[in-house]
Amino acid sequence: MRKLSRICLAGLVLAGYVCVLAWVQGALVAAAGPQVISPYTEPQHWLKCNFHTHSTRSDDGTLAPEAVMALYANAGYDAMAITDHDHYWPGGRFGDMIVLPGQECHVLGGRMVKAHHVLALGATGEIERQPTAADIVAAIRAKGGLPIVAHPGWDGCQLRDAPPCEHFEIWNGVAEQFMSEAAGDWDASLAAGGAARCALAADDLHVPEHFGRGWVMVNAEKTRAGILSALRRGDCYASTGPTVRCVRVRGRRVSVTVEEAATIWFQTSQGKHFSIVGAGDTATHDIQADDWYVRVEVEAPNGRAWLNPIIVQPD
Ligand SMILES: [Zn+2]
Ligand SMILES: [Zn+2]
Image 1 (cartoon, rainbow, N blue to C red):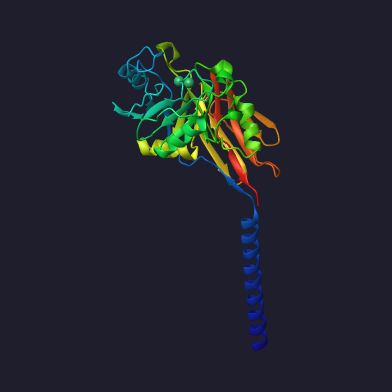
Image 2: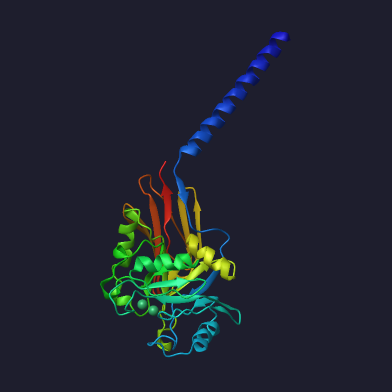
């Protein structure tokens, strides 16, 4: 009996040792594996937003600020901003709609000087004209605002020449024809470790006919602070039509569920993959060992949507 007990005890000790060893090894493998960082939090509750519009306070806008806000509120938008050239709009609420403080900022000499235009979202006051676009970005940040590079491509100002800024318009309703290089420039920037991480689409409305061309869906609580914080983490996507129901990341697997039948493009650091899905279906992609980011584009008959990159941190 005593010998049997010793054998049992030795067996238990050995089993315990093996378990601890396996746990340590597992923990080491988990700690050593690459970390996949998604900007998308769950659960997802999307707010429809447009952050680039002009009113009669711009010399090229035809609608009074109240008429611009009514246009978006009546169409069920959750949030917007009035971004007049060199004029700050403090925002507030318009019925149920959140209006963020906004301005489109220009260098000394104004909007016709060849330099990037930069939107200021959520700043605490007006941004003065500055010598360079980089100075504008710094001035916006100094007032707690979120700088967004507007319509890269317009007047020859490409994204690759923009000041370091995480947010930019990948699509703009009145400058679309100048922006054909924006997505390619974005991939080049991501490959080079550039700052651009969050793509927006916007109407850049000046006249009523510009309404509803492009927007941003933001996964946020419907408050000014909630929307700005979701934008800062990139928890949003740009669209000219398609609706994304949800984006999930589990380990290295990325799943995207869409409302409309679409082609889902997975653009990675190594190349492109695509899936064709029906309405309400989910496309998945497993991030490969040598990929360090993947971003998703949804191509549907009603337009295109751009999601923000999911980044793989090296070991
Ligand atoms: Zn502009
Ligand atoms: Zn504009």
